[in-house]
Length: 198
Image (cartoon, rainbow, N blue to C red):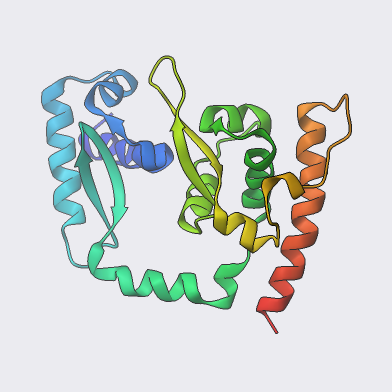
């Protein structure tokens, strides 16, 4: 694989890693390349992203590399979030929110185990909408972040406390939790989305 292909793969890996990012050791393991090659690739990517016609940039924090939006474009992102269309939650976000609401505190890996698919994007959407928040870290390897619902979640769904969530039947499986919760959040979410478009 040539340098251009390595660069493209690293870009894809960073995108897929989401807000957790990747460190050089992880990239080295996946691509099976040496440190000098990794350094060169990261320098090339950084140079590419520094151009004015690119909308993202490469950020290194605490040894991890992340893709992030450029600060000079912040006003446009704010407008997008304030638009009526942005108030709608996707099916994936509603499903992820249901899992968090009924299983909190819960880690991203545990969410993905229940959903059966990667959940970086839905979790990021819910965090940006302030419907969920970090509530601590789980003991164990890597001390992963645990998520729970926020006060804004209660306001958004018209609840006074988490105890007002509709009860789930006894002897229910994990997939049933998701299905039952989806029905509730879809119904309430649809009502709110309809209000937003009027």
